[in-house]
Image (cartoon, rainbow, N blue to C red; front, side, top):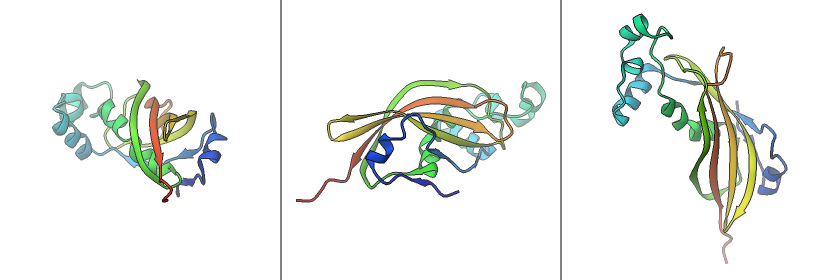
Length: 158
């Protein structure tokens, strides 16, 4: 699916409270989970031991770290929408995050996003996104986050 193209800041401001994009599906592989575990040092068996997880986990398999799911927001959002040319985008933080359901190894996830608030902050546009990450064939979201990003437009030359 091609990203939704948002032509201008003015257009984005008219879309507050509306779903503006849905990303393509992204597969959470065991290799990705293992790499994330190695980088973060979080090697809990529920993530990294498929045999034990098959026997002992309520999910019957390994699951992705919640923070792995959260770390995919940039990729998923970039896949869902295209904004006007920017000089810089800064992750300003999160107001609220909930990991509502597990993401089993091999599952596919995608993000739905809606701007909750848009504010001019100095020479930046601050967008508070409501991002809902859902799992294919899941009955409820995996992650719901309120993510704040500051976008800095390309400066006019002169």
